[in-house]
Structure formats: C-alpha cells, structure tokens
Length: 135
Image 1 (tube, one colour):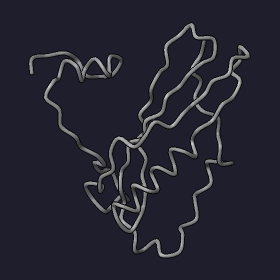
Image 2 (cartoon, helix red, strand yellow):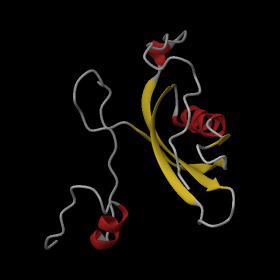
Image 3 (cartoon, one colour):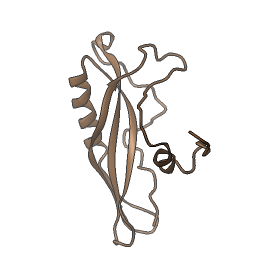
Image 4 (cartoon, one colour):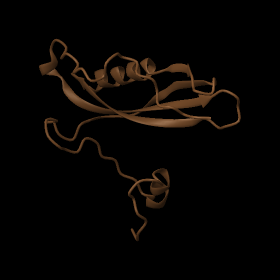
C-alpha cells in the first residue's frame, strides 16, 4: 500500500497564477482543509490529511466558501503503482482565519493556533523537530 501524493491537477504548477479582477480589494486568509485517504482492499485504515491553503477574498464568509470549493475540487481517485484505487475525499474546512499580516512578500508568520496538551501535539508530529523536553 502507498499513499502517494495527489497527482498534479491544474496543469503546470510552475506558472504563476494570473491575479483575478478586483484582486486589490481582497485580503489573505488561511484555511485548513481536511481530507480522508483510502486505499482499496480494506487492509489498512483510512488516513487523514490537513492542508493549509492561502486564499485571497473580500471577506471571511467568501474565504469560507472558497475553502469549501477548493476542498471539493481536490477530491480525486486514481490507481497507484500496485493497481489499487486511492481515493481522496474532502471531509471539511477545519478553520479559516485572516493571515496574521497582510504583507506576504517576505518571510512572515501565516497562521497561529493554541493548544493545551503539548505531549499529544508532539505525537501528531513524531518525525518533526519537536524534540521532547520539559514544558
């Protein structure tokens, strides 16, 4: 079984996207999209992913609608290298917030959330640089 990355869906991703009409009126928002990934055969449990996406819209309500549409657009099924069907299903939008700063031209923080259980949070990112130490 393999949970390959989703195949490229929108053509050449190296090309910058054209700014839509009225782009100057739009603010940046961050949305968290949750997907379920299933590989046919039933021998492995479903996996879940959380994608962080940048959206430019006029209001948080518009950003929420755009996030829903983006999540639905990412639904896909394909055959992996073992001939198994891999299905990515959109579960929902976990969060939509304004970015912390409007200027995204240089290095900056995009998203922040708080939590009260550091050991459980570390478990989510077992292979990251979150080295266990006293909280």
